[in-house]
Length: 193
Image (cartoon, rainbow, N blue to C red; front, side):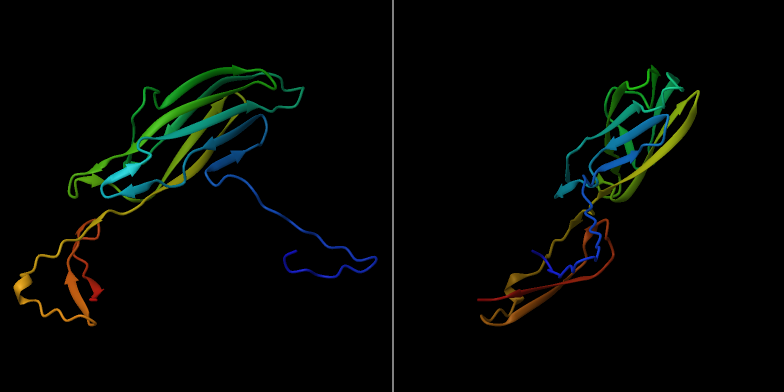
């Protein structure tokens, strides 16, 4: 169907297809399989983010071989950078307890970006956080990143009487944006009809 190629008698060819959900991270090493489901980015409409808060869900399953049995004293800890904060009722560290072989549980944290006092909006950029799982049988840490888009507000304050606007021409204005790109010069062009 796509890029057809002839396969002659006796020849072999290997095709690999990758699939999955972009916002999921998984570590299946025994004794505990751990998965994280969370958005990989949020959207920004003016100063507002969506979703905000966002949900980080951790799935824990005892995938140990039969001889290992129960995994004991399991704890899950969400480690956030300074730019993210907890907004739900779950604490940073949750005592899961014990999980028998084949058993599973999930933990949900509500998280939101902190506000930037200088711009009166939320911080932005790629923000990495970790989930650390500890148990008597060992520990593992999974890391994820969420992207918060930059906020930019541009206003052009000019005396309209001084504009020489002629239909069919392009007018270019230079503006200094306010927000997280403050101080950078940006040129805007409009075609006049």
